[in-house]
Amino acid sequence: MKKLRKAVLPVAGLGTRFLPATKATAKEMLPVVDKPLIQYAVEEARAAGIEQFCMVTGRGKTALVEHFDVAFELEATLRDRAKSEALAALHGAQSEPGSIVTVRQQVPLGLGHAIWCARAFIGDDPFAILLPDDLVLADKPCLAQLAEAYYETGGNVVAVTEVPHEQTNRYGILKVGSDDGRLVEVTGLVEKPDPKDAPSNLSIIGRYILLPKVIDYLSRMERGAGNEVQLTDAMARLIGEQPFHGLRYEGRRFDCGDKVGFLEAQIAFALKRPDLADAVHAFLKNYV
View 1 (spheres, rainbow, N blue to C red):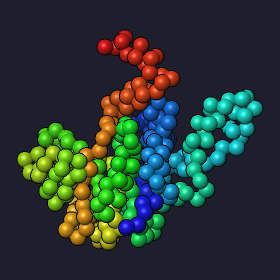
View 2: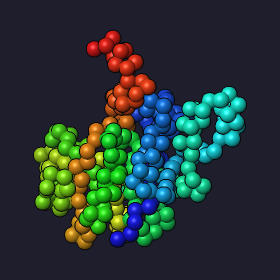
View 3: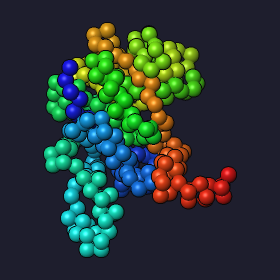
View 4: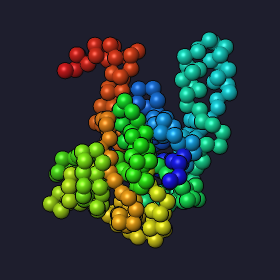
């Protein structure tokens, strides 16, 4: 079993649900409290032992890489003004030289196509996928929980959660075999099934650990739901060839691609901050 060292972050989306805020700013740069979504994703991956990152970007996304670069002038100014806390926060956003690379997804052909664009980076290694829109508040980072399951099973692992049955047409849904309450054997995958056809209400969220064999199936460029190359369809081909499990992770997921989910994440993460919790509790009383 190879060590998990690589992560792919698909960040080429236009963020149309957050216009006009995302007209000139990548949606992954939108902050939750005081950190952008992309930084939460990278920090979560690092906590799981990830050392190398590939961002699958589109036009106008250069700020995502620049966020993790060294800002000499800003650092000098903060030192001169003795802003030690701000300087420490700035250093937390920096990456090791060469640890982040980018590739372009030149046409929007779906999540599966975005992962295929990172095929040279992935090579023959297992890799994680993190969708920054999905933000998980947990005592142990979600991807670290997935990494434990990967080393335990030696195969593909996806984070799963239960969704209302009438909403299965929004998600990739599992057909399940054995289930010990934590790890679920995946016997099938269906992308956005109609509720009457859904094999369960267990949905995949934006955290995956996959073996490189999935690239072989993505390379076929077969179109699925929405006439896009669906990652779910390629993963389904792995079932029976390799171990495949869903993990009921511990934590709370916020859909930050949705305005209400994004606003809720602001409150939840602020309430976890010792420096903010009391003040947030105080002002919330004005709105309840």
